[in-house]
Amino acid sequence: MPILALLVVNTLIMALCFFVLWLIACRLKDASFVDSWWAFGIVLTALVSFMNSQPGSAHAIALTILCTLWGVRLGGYLLWRWLTQGKDRRYATMMGKAQSRKGWSFAKASFWMVFALQAPLQFIVSLPVQIGQMAPPSTLGALAWLGVAMALTGITFETIGDWQLTRFRAEPANAGKVMDQGLWRYTRHPNYFGDACLWWGLFLIAAETTIGIWSLPGPLLVTVLLVKYSGIPTVEGHLTKRRAGYSDYVRRTSNFIPWPPKTI
Image (cartoon, rainbow, N blue to C red):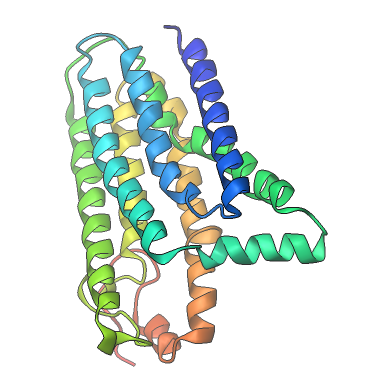
């Protein structure tokens, strides 16, 4: 399939999926589960792209396997968190403000502020696993193997970070305390750092195919989102106000890239 045709097909599939999920959200009056679809939807995009790639393409196989490992793990974790913990405060706050300040219905607010926004973002972020699969078959070179190593590092980092945080929160004695153990001792957001590593790794694999260089907006966008918008700021603003000792944790711990803590 020509690359332009693939991108159009993937766009239509994404739009349909987000529309159906929006209808479900309207029925539940909760859009929180969309976080899990962020990962599952990208896996679907990778699989559709793989089915239309050149048979035997090592780059397509690597991109699809790594993306699936990441997406199934993360999507399953986020779905479990939603099922066990209920509404995400970020979405509840967002919907509440739109309804009270703008007079929007839940349906209108969730459509424009969540589903219609995330669909194009998902498309851009997933460009490496779309474009990178369309090149003619070839063996993995040094750049691609570097990408594989980086992606696996990111998946491992993100998985361990989520596991450590889940265990910490499960202990009643830790209620109200700041998580500063394990990977969280070296970065305040090991899960976000791991996510960024995954996408830069996938980009390196795609970039080796030459045409995959055009997927650069994907890792750039996800990094900016994590660091400046939907990631770190939404978490730290909440914790600084409500968690005693979090300001000290911020002063001694690296914001994003793992680094030994400062002495304060």
